[in-house]
Amino acid sequence: MEKFSKDIQFWKFSFYGFVKNLRFFDPYLILFFREVGISYFEIGILFGIREIATNILEIPSGIIADSYGRRRSMMAAFVAYIFSFLVFYFFPAFVPYIGAMLLFALGEAFRTGTHKAMILDYITRQGIADQKVHYYGHTRSWSQRGSALSALLAGLIVFAHGQYHQVFLYSIIPYIIGFLLLKSYPKYLDFSSETIGAGGAEGRPQTSEDAVISDEAVGKKIKRRLRDSVQATLHDFRDLLKYRKLRRLMLNSSLYDGVFKTSKDYIQPIMRNLALGLPVLLALGEQKRVALVIGGVYFILYMLTATVSQRAGKVSEWFSTPEKGLNLTYLVSIITVVAVGVSMRYNASLIAVVLFIGFYVLQNLRRPMTVGYVSEKIKGTVMATGLSAESQLKTIVVAVASPIFGALVDSVGLGWAMCALAVLPLAAYPYLRVQK
Image 1: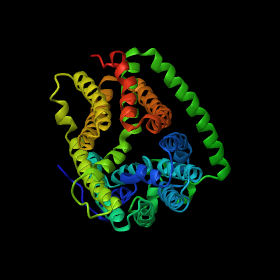
Image 2: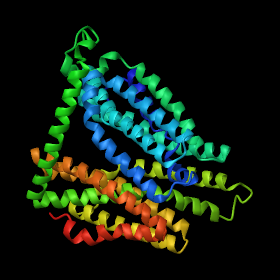
Image 3: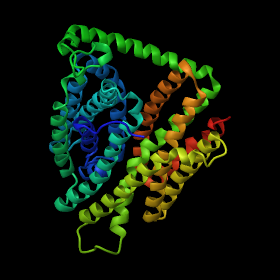
């Protein structure tokens, strides 16, 4: 039962999630890269760079957020995003896009987790910490609405202009709004109430500037944390090798999610083939037909995944044991990847799109099941080890698989490449099957 008031800050938190997900380029990213002459291999390299850079930059970005303020760090993230969009729009070539991906990764690193920390800190100050699930769930629902609307608006943008690169220019508008929105947040949200201490009637820090440390101290802290992080990661991997069941579960999860992240955007060229093969809307130009189909399909896709994510708990109860649920979704998903590849080989684009949507839905169903299973079965420091190792492994899988997958698409086509992507997870299943 909700016991919190929907004050102005609640609506600011909600509007942030809505604006942040107005990424008009997402449904057309691969098609955009292809339009400017970038090969699938180079696309894979760019995706790999983004994953590795985001992972590396999360450590210094977290320290900077703690030192200079969360709100300021979030504003810096939106500036990095905007400059990334400008590079994508004005410098259509592979080498500048490496810089654009690094800027985008910087934005991701500064943003990830920071806004949630501000929300949790705010509800603690308001004395409604027991309502955090309801409160955060309400604000997150606006993110899903933003994704769905973004797909439709992106389709209209491409339909109106007949070019993909315009989506980056339009994406700057909501991100400027997001920057100004974050600037309007209360300054006391820059720092945790637990770290600084509260003062005054509204629980504001007495002097926020006291929490800011010198640039030299921040630099030393970043170097120390980077060294400690490398040591901790090596320690996590050593522990992962010691615990057989933990190793099996983490490899299962990271390989599955890595395959999904590597292949998920390749639904775009499949939808393009579908749009061009439809016997309707022939009076429209190629780009306009593609815009209508992709915008509509992504809208349906986001609405489906939002619904499935919310009901993952109920669906998981259909299985007699959670292990059966995880194993079945793993197998069905990987077989679906093979089926997508076979459909592409026989030019059955409609079937391939439907199967790809099924793959998206299964991933959004399986992820909550995996997290819930880990939290139940793995306790204490071992759980921290598992989750840390899983995150690192997933980054490695995507960084390695993305360029290889792109090169396969260039050489043998998307159909065979999808089939090849499924070979390793299928072959590894007997060894990675989750056991009770």
